[in-house]
Image (cartoon, rainbow, N blue to C red; front, side, top):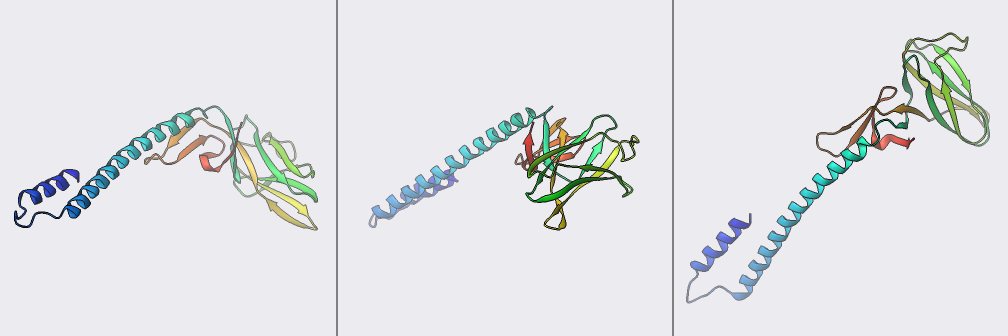
Length: 195
């Protein structure tokens, strides 16, 4: 470190041969090295302080998300038995049909929800009822969107909604996770919309 560098330089000056004094260009080069070492250590200290401030800022920003709805890409959500499960799909142009299929934990398709085939964002909401109108039990359900495009069926990515109840910061402070009862833990980078 800097203390060792100074000790080495002063020892060199004390023990130089009087008949062959230290070369002035070498001495200037060592002083320049000392300045560089000092600057690097100062920059490292400043970056450490900045990193701590950014972690604090990220935690504070994350806390402001509590109580908000978020939309994140996913294929399953937990139905509480009371609240609806909401989602969003980007329907491509030229789609002849677009249907959300909801599957229970046993792998049985329990509900089909038809979406508008107009190109663009289409929202859907599931009230926890089966196709026959029966109320389904709370639990984890899978969602899939199939669209008929150019004569073939294709699966579309969908966004599911969840209410943020808490926020977690990783141990190293580099990533933020929002926790929702519907979607579970979702990395902030995977959140597509905050409502």
